[in-house]
Amino acid sequence: MKALFIGGTGTISSAISSSLVEQGWELYLINRGNRSERIPAGAKLLKADINDEALVSSLIKDHNFDVVADFIAFIPSQVERDIRLFSGKTKQYIFISSASAYQKPLSDFRITESTPLANPYWEYSRNKIACEELLMAEYRKNGFPVTIVRPSHTYDDRSIPLGVHGNNGSWQVIKRILENKPVIIHGDGSSLWTLTYNTDFAKGFIGLMCNIHALGEAVHITSDESLTWNQIYQIIASALGVKLNAVHISTEYLAACSDYDFTGSLLGDKSNTVVFDNSKIKRLVPGFNATVRFDQGVRLVLENINSHPELQLEDKDFDDWCDKVIANYINSMKK
Image (cartoon, rainbow, N blue to C red):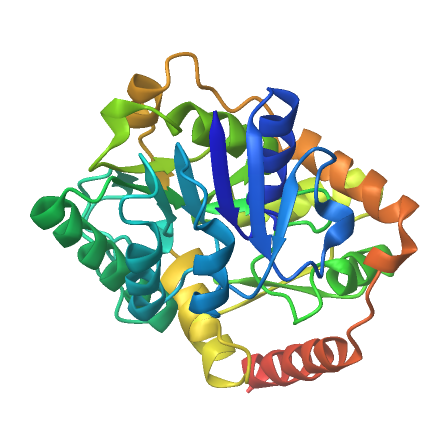
């Protein structure tokens, strides 16, 4: 079987790429080669910027694929480009959307694939919705063989998933926890969230590849484990072997006093309770089950970060922002 991934070295896609090569797939990756260390041995790199349509077209002119998957398409014009490039060149095109596209606020915390798509808080999510609509119209009109996949919060061994963090990943929050500095949890920390390790996501994704029953369908792939944000941060602190010093600050306050996009990432996503009904992926991929609990995944991440100093990225701006916001919030509560 022959697949082409646009991207293929990111948080979600790297585990899929590695697993496919191990399974004997002929895998091609279109990317700029900036993460060459994450390209699995045996995969074939077509070095290009996907936005250079003429170059990409020349690179794939002698190829046809069983599956093409785009992990880095975010706006409709990028999807339109893919339709031009891959119509007649692939038996299945997989678009990676986002579970953040689901209705916010939710009318029912239990999410199925039929939950309406609407997110007034986050442009990222609205763009994903527009991409989905464009692709489904192309499927209905011209038979473009699309499958839409909606990941939720998927993580790998390079960064712990968090609610409130800066631009350099999770290390600064880990450092604050280790130093017993106060750590921000949005809201009261009681809303439920779902976290999925990338190797678990890969099992569901690969099961959709070359799956005739997945054509014209939208499917989310997540763990069945639901945790409150309080539990998530407590699990992280426990894995670090220290006590958690948590400060709960309202999501609206965080969004109002920050240049970080907490309106989108929190109000439009993480502050909402989400529990995913995974019946559809389990029907399409019999035997699929996420097996990495979050407490297990956290230990895998910490072990990797501790052994790779280059992942321990300081973020002084975020650290200073946390100190300032916490101090201001505590002072305001005293008044």
